[in-house]
Image 1 (cartoon, rainbow, N blue to C red):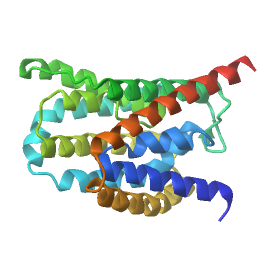
Image 2 (image 1 turned 180 degrees about the horizontal axis):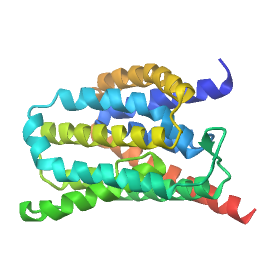
Image 3 (image 1 turned 90 degrees about the horizontal axis):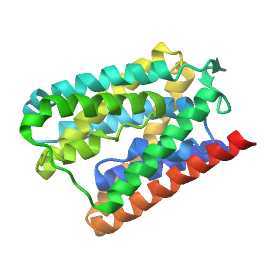
Length: 260
């Protein structure tokens, strides 16, 4: 096993562990670390299978899928539209099947990813939780979904702003975990379609994504085991600090590359 393969495997073990403990964070952690060595679209292509499988499992174990589906349909439709728009925005010419890390499109995607990670980390550390009134859901849901889709299409990360939005709906714990799984599943499938249409999810990428499921699954099992053996608040604080640091590093790296 070469160094690059070992690094990717360890990234997916860590990302799966975070998802096992917190119920979210697999694509966020994986993209943050993978893009240290890979172009954003290549990293996103590796995420498709592990993210889809773990999210389907998460939404299938919840208590009330159909009522959530009915409530969140406008938001989920907007996620799909936004993902297509984000894929269109990231239209730099591909190199060897993927966008070059040094291309303007790749650099722009890396900057957006860094800002999204840093923003999510800062928001998590602040402890802020908004509230969305039921009368505001018809317009707030599609708005959050469209913004999430655009970020997913550009960066491969689909937690912002859908995760804070769902937390603001005042769902109970089990419904929230299931709603996150539903939103992430739809986002993953929409991203897979966009990558396929762009030619970024070909046979080699699909094979690598299937193999990435193994370390991600192992990490998720370990995370579930750890969930009952450590304070969740401590882990989440470390998680958000790490995201803030990784996002800041991503932004600084892009800035230094642009100045070079």
